[in-house]
Image (cartoon, rainbow, N blue to C red; front, side):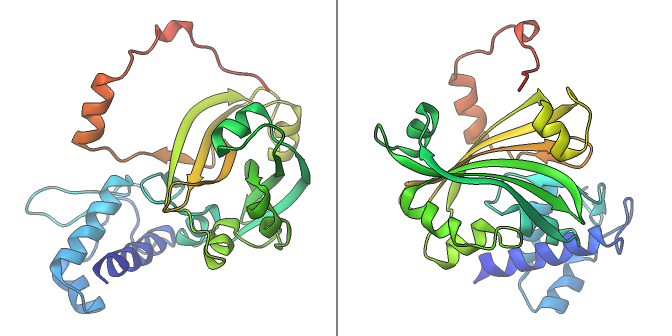
Length: 258
């Protein structure tokens, strides 16, 4: 119950920040005020503040009230949430336009990411996502056949795939992300209404259910002037990172083309 409560309070505060009720530089209500407003414990409110802090929306100093430091367009990867939920949490209106939806053989990469055998079929979708009727992101998603049949039956102009799959018993429990930048090719430039070779933010994501089965492999390409990313961290993650293979010399990297 506590977990559900703090998420509800956090979503309310994110929406209020996005609506301008708490502009950048202003203070959020005190712990006591929020405890009384929502009828929850101090621990729940502190969980709420901790989430907003990790998402880059507020700053906190000991002995002072929390201060709003950003007001919109921050996409956090700490929680597995859909584009639609994220946009609505900021007071916006999400929508989509299907560019292509087809059955086809899985590529080698899709077979690997979705744990499929050779020759397996997937449902592949290219969809333009809009925020308040303005282009924000192009998603290219692949689904295993049984999940793809559900996706193909949705109203993809309006429905959130993540929310509808959860309602069908296929909730995304966790996800892994690979984030980088690339330049817009002709199709992305046309869909996102930007110039060719405009830098885009790319998130390649595998979404899994609670049992660890991959349900979706997607590549999302965002307009960098619409979305920024925040990523939570922990000492455990830092420890694992220290043991990982060192990166190449940064000068060896180039922006990818499409």
